[in-house]
Image (cartoon, rainbow over all chains, first blue to last red; front, side, top):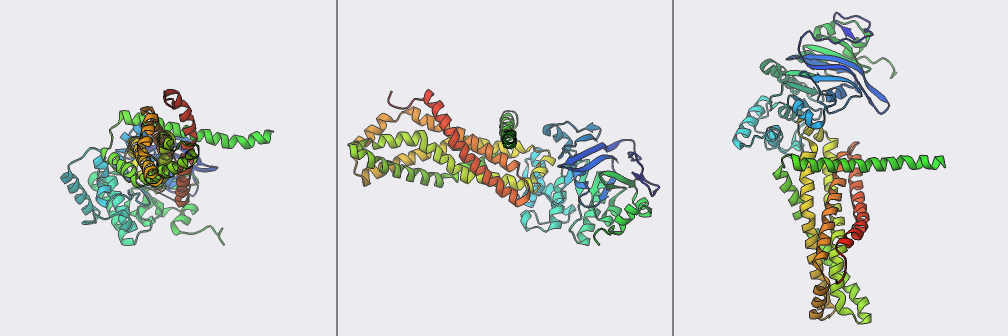
Length: 269
Length: 264
């Protein structure tokens, strides 16, 4: 793994880097094989409480798989994942429920419940937590719709929303219960630059105002540089680089340079 | 020989794995029913979906089956001068076999397919992952309301099918085949016992359980987008129908020990 100051050679032994003493998320030697393909080959990573980490890497490199592991949606073949000090490996679905209340996740396509309206989708976590007062629910939904700049859209069905709107509603649903950590899977992919910027602002606002720990999986370098305190580059199933956005921009490592500048290695020629 | 067993091994293993998954889902559901709160709104929605909205299909199935069965029985029995026994044969057959089996097949086609498609679509569009991520256990939210609604609705639907089938048989026998109504009713009441109805309703309950778990399991294991959902739906209907027909034989043999047929 490359750490700041950047070097041109990745170190043989990956080392966990965070700079904070109490990580919200700690991943150790995480490995996952799907079919015959090794997706993760020993990922080590820490995310400190209140910080935003962007995980970047090429398509199909295992970023979303890593993210799903963090909330227990996938089970690793080896390794450890600690969320807020609790090792979630070996927990069953019901035990994971307590962890998942602390961690919100925004899925790549929003993953809205298509039989529910926008309002019902957003209020869903509160209803499940036992909130029954319709006025209180409505007030909270309206408040969060204002935050995601979608006032007056509560009666729409997901099928009538654009991709960006779906992502914003998905985000509203994942943060309405005020989790201490939010995971974002490609929050700006497929969005126009203005909507993408509004999502980035929202991520920053959550960190600044509520101290939410965030992990953002993205291809979008502008988004990564905008929102992240640290950036991790996932390459061939391992964390290849970990550092600040500025350190990433200054790196001379050819693999990172290729990624940052969007250069192919010529195999397609 | 080794090649034969090798070829047989993989499908056999996957069959037992499938049975295991069904049993685990059923065990998980029953555990959840007794240990976790019921989502009443979802349960009532499913009662409407399974019970109320299946009525037209069940009434038509029961009605026309009773009618044609009465006609065919009369055509055969009349040759040996036993036309008035038609009512007894129709009634007992519909209570013990035709009512539960045909209702189950119709429900498997209508409700089982819908369950599998709905849950399968949720699976491939990450909605089930979203449920899990929101700390909602999918079995509690998706399977328990459907299973309870099915356990309640199926016996009621079968009872309805039996009633309509017997009524349709009576109508055909009396008004179209000119059987003496008094003899028809007397024979029917004499030969139809409460145990025949209990047997039909017991079968209905068992078939409901088979359909709901087979359909939900297929939905929950759907993969590979729209094609996967289509495949899961087809397999749910086919497997449910086959399971109903196969289990019907064993249930008949078992229940006949408890509720023997005939006038005793």
